[in-house]
Image 1 (tube, rainbow, N blue to C red):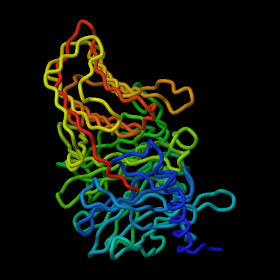
Image 2 (image 1 turned 135 degrees about the horizontal axis):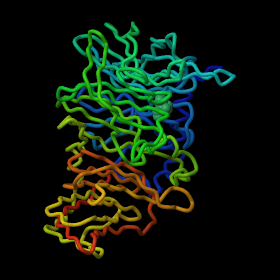
Image 3 (image 1 turned 90 degrees about the vertical axis):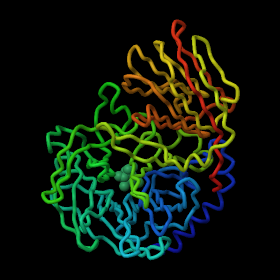
Image 4 (image 1 turned 180 degrees about the horizontal axis):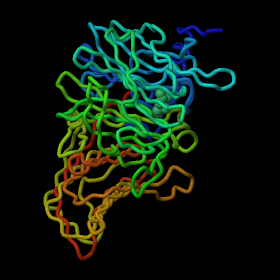
Length: 488
Ligand code: FRU
C-alpha cells in the first residue's frame, strides 16, 4: 500500500526530533559546514538562487546513517554561510520514485521553481527502473510532483539519472548521466521549449566520443555551464583505474573544458581534469547567482566511506557538504575559491609576518586549535620541503619532487596513515579551512584543492611547521577562529 506523503514526512521529522541530542552531542559535528540534521547526506541537489535566497537541497536518508530510499532535504540561506533547515521538499512516496528521489537540479521559470530529479524504482527482483521527474513550487518550500517527463531511451540501461537543467537562448537543456547497453559511461542531452516535453539529442560526451577512449562504465551527476568564454562539463565517471597520482578515490569527479555547439549538440573538449585531490569530494553541482558568480557545492564524502568506518555513525549522522566555492576559468584551468562571504565568519585574527621555518618544529603563538582558517603566503623559498602538521594530519610540499601531499589517519581501527598527492611546480600560497572533522586546502589561489574528512584524537590541536635542515622558508601567516553557524 502506498504510504502517504504526510506519513513519510512525519516519520522523518520525528526521527529528527528523537535524535536531536544524540546528533548534537557529537564532538565531530561540524561548525560551519552543511550537514544532515540526522541520517545520511550525499549529493547536493537543486542548488539555485530563487526570490533572493539560496536554496540547497540534498540527497537524504533520514532513517539511518546509511544509503536508502532518498528524500530531498532542504536548506535556505541569505548569504551562503548561514543555512536554516527548511521543510522536506520531496519524499519517495510515488510509484515512480518509491526507492528514492535521486539527484537532480532546479531552475526558475516565471517565478516558479522547477525541480528535476530521478525517480529510482526497484522491482521485487531487484531490477532497476529510472524516471526523470518534475516537481514545481510556487514558494520554494512546497513542491507539487508532476511525475515522469522522460523515460530511458533505447540503447541505455536504467543507470540513467541526475538531470541538470539550464537555459540558453530561450531553450531549455538537460544533461543526464548515463550508461549505454555496452556498459560505457556518457553524458547525454535533452532539449525542451516548455520544461515538460523533452526531446533526446544524443551523446554530449562519453567513452568513445570526441577522441575519448574507454572512460568508465557509468557517468554520474553531469553539469554543463559557460564560464569566462569556456564551456565546462563537470562529471563523475565510475570505473577509472588509478594512474599515478590520479583517480585514487573509488569514483572520480572532474571536468572537461571545451566548446559546446548548441546547434549541432556537439561538444569538443580537452582532457579530463580532477576537481579535487582529497579523499572526500564527489557529485558537485553548480548554479549561477544574481551577482553572476558560478558557485559550487560538492558532497564531502565518497562512496567507499560509508557505514561503520566513520565515528559519526554512533551519533546517527554521516557526511557533509564542502564549503561553497566560486569558480573561475583562468590560464587554461578551473580555479576554486572559497566564497567571499566566508570572511564574515572570521574572528580573533592572529598575524605573524616573516616567519622563518628552518629544520625543527616551529609553533606560532595563537596558531592552534581544531576549528580555524589559516592562510600562508610564501615570501621566500629556499628549501627541499616544507611540512605542516595540523592535528593528526599533515601537509607537505616537496619542491625537489614537485609533489604536494595531504596525509591523514584512516578511519579504520588501526588508524594507519594514508595520503593523496598532486604534482605542483611551486608553492606560493595555501588557504586551509579546518573544521572539527574536515580539512579543505586551497593551493596557489585555488589551482589545486584537497577536501577530506578527518577524525583526530580529542587533543590533536597542534599546528607546527618544519622544513629541511639545510633549507629556509619564509612565510606570512594569518589565522582566524571561525564562528559556529550550525545550530541544527
Ligand atoms: C551519486 C549518486 C547519484 C544518485 C544519487 C543517489 O552519489 O549515486 O548518481 O542520483 O547518488 O543518492
